[in-house]
Length: 295
Image 1 (cartoon, one colour):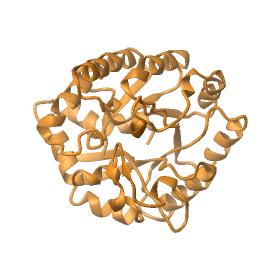
Image 2 (cartoon, rainbow, N blue to C red):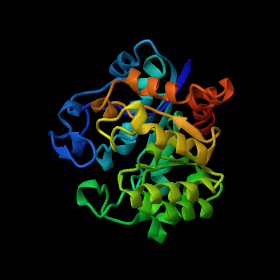
Image 3 (cartoon, one colour):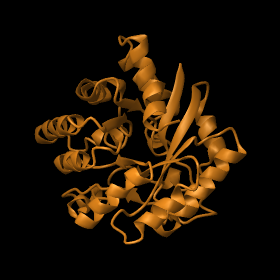
């Protein structure tokens, strides 16, 4: 089966500074980061592919020091130009609330593989699960910056938790001409009854916006000991809510390598969609990513 992996990372710790990889820590989301504190380059990604036919990929900004985000994009473009083409798409960081965001976006799009922007939005009552200190979506300056994405032909990768999904849906409605891609299955981190119900409700709110798609990925971050059966309800509920035309399977490697092999992730997706039609499976594994990220 031909695969497009629309969510992975690369990093070169000798070339750039990644604050979260500067030294091993125990994170509230991924646990012990020690195995991640080494370079992960195109050759490492391709080695993880194993025998799978991964024909294209999309790189998501790797939380490099934010003042180096344009350099990260240029580096990734140089990798794509020099080798077998990975990554075929690039999603970069930009602070949409910054006064110079228009110029930053213009600099990013000088790299031809640039497809979108991600600015992580996750806020959680548990500080160990919170990624940012500001409620960006509530800020008018940020919303104005978001409005510039369409001018530059860019999508937005939206990483958030379920209590923020109503805001996410409001943002999608306000910017109906911009493609939004929800990251990591909506990050169902709260596994009590309230959290799961809230996740389903929020995902339905997002799915009601036709410009929103979702990547089914990152399930190891919210279930460190995942099995095909443990992720089944989240995968199948997401597909039921968004439909097979707006879901993209992805790896989140090497972060999710902490919780299983590349082959295991894609084997789980394969097993969970065994009863789907050939066209539906092609959409989930390949075609939707090609369309959403213009590959």
